[in-house]
Length: 57
Image 1 (cartoon, rainbow, N blue to C red):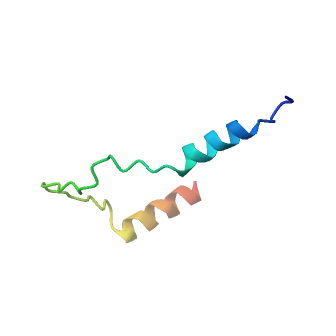
Image 2: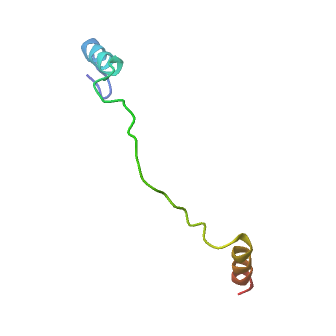
Image 3: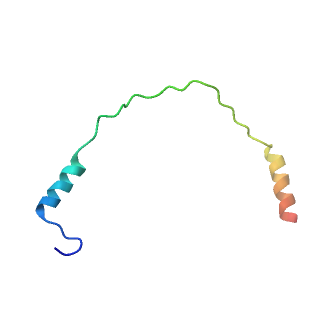
């Protein structure tokens, strides 16, 4: 057999392998409880001022 070539048995094995679906996993969603906070940082104006200072240097 040349490189990359395979016989009919190999083709059937690969076809069977790719056509099976594993449904044995737990598909229930996990509920998370807790608190989340976002720090938005500086205001838009402060960020624009900082950008202008950086551009002028």
